[in-house]
Image 1: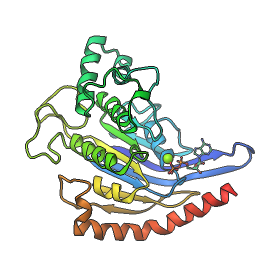
Image 2: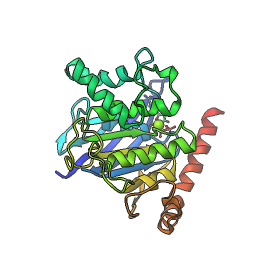
Image 3: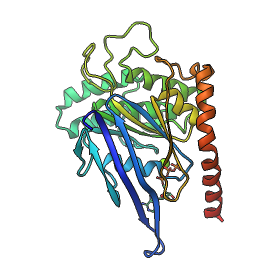
Image 4: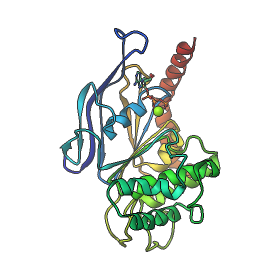
Amino acid sequence: MADHALELLDITCTFRARDDARQRYTAVADTTLCVAAGEFVSVVGPTGCGKSTLLNVAAGLLEPSAGSVRVFGRPLAGINARAGYMFQSEALMPWRSALANVMVGLQYRGMAEAEARAQATQWLARVGLAGFEDRYPHQLSGGMRKRTALAQTLALDPDIILMDEPFSALDVQTRQLMENEVLDLWAGGEGRRAAPSPERTPLGGGHAVPGGRGRKAVLFITHDLDEAIAMSDRVVVLSAGPATHPIGEFVIDLPRPRDVAEVRMHPRFVELHSQIWGVLRDEVLKGYAQQLQKAA
Ligand SMILES: Nc1ncnc2c1ncn2[C@@H]1O[C@H](COP(=O)(O)OP(=O)(O)OP(=O)(O)O)[C@@H](O)[C@H]1O
Ligand SMILES: [Mg+2]
């Protein structure tokens, strides 16, 4: 479908066991998952079920054993150049300052140093890090490192944003701040603010174009159901592994703009939470039991 930014079609991912090449583990099986242009989709599922695996497939970092990926209607071959990826683990280069970390992707794309510096500075300011340009990752707090990673991803102006539990290591307050900021940037600065800020463009867009390009498509991985509901247009629930696949899909018809802390009090939020948790609960318990078994 042309209006889909990203289509994962009948994806299966089978891994070889590390200690015994004859043994195989099917992490994800027959999974179809689509994100429309401008849509914010979250995927929730128990730990170890295959969420990062699916995101790696969407990024073109992992070739599925079966199935296909389409990006804006075209088959994906190799790295997904239309997507920006925010990893689950910290991915900043420790030997580069915050500014240099944000600049590096722009320079790889052939941008002249002065222009890359100007854009990276602008992006650091947008994520609230003006004045921290020269700090190295070890001189930044966990939240600031995540902000830098966010600036790094958005500076490249991707049409699709892939986020793998980006804020799970943060304390609750910092996390909610960051979630609101992501929503705000995604909405083009009109998020929770009454008056749109002219400097902000919808997620990405190094150049300020008021009323410019539309929202980005976002595929957001989390195991936190509250976060998924608060942020998304749609929540997809994955089963526990092996052979993980979607077992439920819910349209989040909560009004926007949203404040992630306040929206939790909305009666519709509570209703959606209880519906989705009804589907997710058993899978979480299964996933947990499997982890214990693996550890034994
Ligand atoms: N390269 C690999 N080789 C072998 N097994 C793998 C590989 N990558 C992932 N797996 C296995 O596939 C399953 C899914 O892993 P994945 O990292 O996608 O889970 P996840 O849902 O992202 O987990 P978490 O919530 O803990 O981040 C796990 O059982 C994992 O051990
Ligand atoms: Mg993961």
